Image (tube, rainbow, N blue to C red; front, side, top):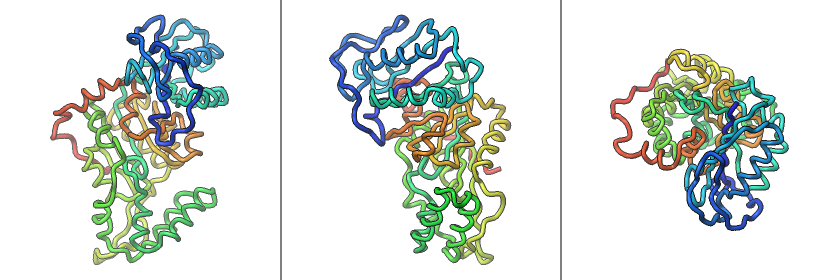
Length: 368
């Protein structure tokens, strides 16, 4: 079995914490089967050879190691992202493939967390396989993932009911309400809001850093892409068109008979955690893509189920509870950094984003 681990230095993180142990000047990471470049000095904001060696010692506590490779992904001299691949002769999780990192964290979570704290890094573990290297479907949450805002909060602000909506949201987060109940209660407060609110929101919505670039890169690699949201279809459809996504699914708010205002009611099946999971499976089946070749990115508890069925599920800048339960977690200043989890170097990412990055005739989004 081969396990690949991405060490991601917290200097790149959206929520950096205090640095780990300071390191003395040393050469770039190297291994028995890879050459990572000429000698240079490490800064405190990069991953040192000592850090990589410490991870290999950690690995030996669970693996019977045969060999390993160490590969800086961004900078050969001062790397902040390093890929470590180890091959084991025996390991307790040999039979598991999907979301291997989550299973390892459950088994050795205390040790992994201590390593992350000591060395000021994030650790993302996956089984090294062709399915890891060649994903074919990327599925994203919308609010606080592809965009920086929470759409329902923005609508509530315009309607003057922000405090009431926030109170219901807090109750849901505390486990007092399920998602469907909380969504219906929040939507009821939007009764009478002009139906033009979604067009108005388009001018205030901010794409998350790296969102557009990530989708461009994935599309050039031949990915199908989707946004699945517990928000509302007018915004997800617009976002899908804006980014060139293939699929868009969200909730339908009812508009009054004269088309002027929102009624505060929802129509059709609510896109909750279970629905998101089912949609991932349906889209993958429709496209003929094994779930092992699916990547899911989200930030909320509503995204955990769809993360769990994908070959790679990533909690991106997520709530604390979600980070603890997600298959993988990444705190970063840019969504583009997700490409590192697929093993793509900075140079390869730049090549993917070089003009012309993809055909203007990309497929239109679908809301089937």
